[in-house]
Length: 305
Image (cartoon, rainbow, N blue to C red; front, side, top):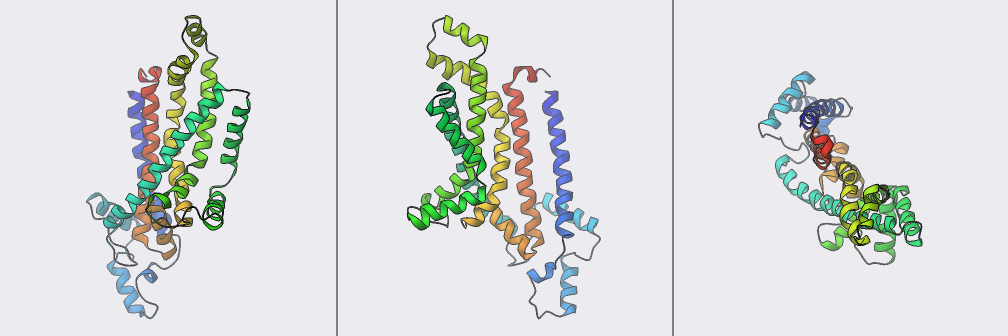
């Protein structure tokens, strides 16, 4: 339990430091945030009055404290671009990102784990070679290039699926598969490696000598022991999906948090860019914390530490 407590403290420190880094990086990155709200014809006096109104003339450390205080009290602020409430944006676009991310995360394990088990059981066969070729290809092709290929083949050429939009099942298929592809490939390799490592252990030979069927040995005993490294990487898969979602949502026109964040950065919409950056960072950090906790629970030796 000391390990979990230590990781929890470390996670809180990372979140705190990340909030400072994100805030200062956005505020000091240059550009004029006033242009996101006021027209080009606005006078110098109007621009200065608006800067004073939204607190941009305060020292940056005071801006940070005021911003974090507002977020912790439930005041997320409003968009400079259209005065939309950020909480309403979070509900709307957060749901879209959750649907896409959860689907991609599910595909990673629904496809990756069985394929990895199949490759391990059929080791050195044509099945193993085919699965591993697929895994290598999934890791080698850049995410954005795979997205463009998918749009060209399945949307433009074959016309089977829409190239963009939200949020029907047909519109979800392409972005979810593209978003999950590298995670599937890594999960296949990890599952195969973990399965092979456990298949060669002494307890497997003992179970075979005891008369248990190969199907039961592999499906119950070997797979259960192979779950530990798979669980430990689950949090990394979440972080990977969130990182790639920025590209996938823009390419496929999926109105999620990633697309909102990219548009906010381009428009110098400080409140939106700051908040959604913190949201994505928080999800990544917490997913890694959950992976550490899951790994500790799954490994009896770590539970005693």
